[in-house]
Figure (cartoon, rainbow over the protein chains, first blue to last red):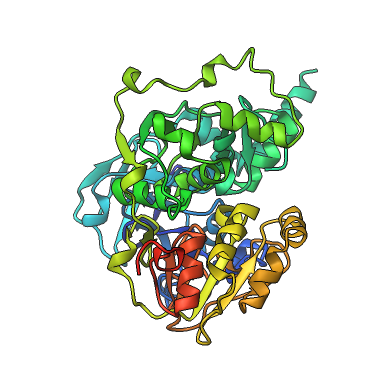
Length: 173
Length: 320
């Protein structure tokens, strides 16, 4: 995550997209993000993984309570594995939200966006300015992620962050 | 449930149903596997202190009502995000009639309302539970876990146990729960009793109350999966397994079983499933075309005998 701007096509989904819809239980034996990505949101609509790949979708725009249900990190991995750079939702379920940060996936709560965009629209998310630009030129602002959270995301996730902290500690010893 | 968690502790687990331990008066919440690893390495995690959602429990639990019916009723009132990021805190005179098994089921499914955790006060039932495990709980420093007096706190939700009906969650959300009367008669292909929600000895006992000297309908496969080896061994020793198998149930080795559609009973296309588990999300137990209904072990067992969703009172002598 070097860039502070994410620009890409969106896929719009509804409310209460649960972890079983994001990655059905039968795929939990898969471990690699790239393998899981081939099945992302298959529970919602089996044509989605193909659509994401063919159309080059980079952002998921969702309604309320995205990621409710299981603590399975596979849900986050599947999204990352499909090439998605950010999920923008009205609200997130709490374990999914933490998992996303801990795996380096950008998660943004932006009210009202899902009613302003359609599948295939290109939006630009500016993480520094905390705003999203939609095709009409309108800007939708969002609450910035806390600095500590951004550090974890930028490190590429919590484990990488922990390793970095350890290295810094050892270097200053 | 086997003495690993004690009142007053802070517990995290790489399972959303870690909240179950709130029944033991601990702060317990689910995290992802990365955070669980971080906690193991550093002994620390960050948390925002959750806002409370106060639930007052009145009345007395009737014999045909289980902890499962209580939490499904709560979920039907608050919805699937009604407790998001909150701590479900239970108090009231009705807690006296909720066994530890009932409390575990209630705390377990608090996450289905989005709760960060659920917590029951430390009372006689908690202490006797630990006594049975052969553990002594020193309550000197645990005053903060004492029950809230009903007059001290305004509740967000009130549940009257005495007037509860057996509850069933319709597809595809646990919060989509209604009285069993509204779904009675729906044909059942598969019935499942098990999981962290209702796979304990007490749940198998409830099922056996219905299944004793009865037969599972020939159109239904009833699968029973004890939640742990300890549960299975106790059920063997107490002769419950014989009763279940004689009734025509398929008893599998202990595990999560059919709950998340992994193995040991996967739902097929267009099948109706009634299950004692915690989630009826689309595709949760196998085919996305299956319809999953959630209910107590009593309601699941009664429905397995009847061949369709049934009020367990029919087999417990309450209604003719």
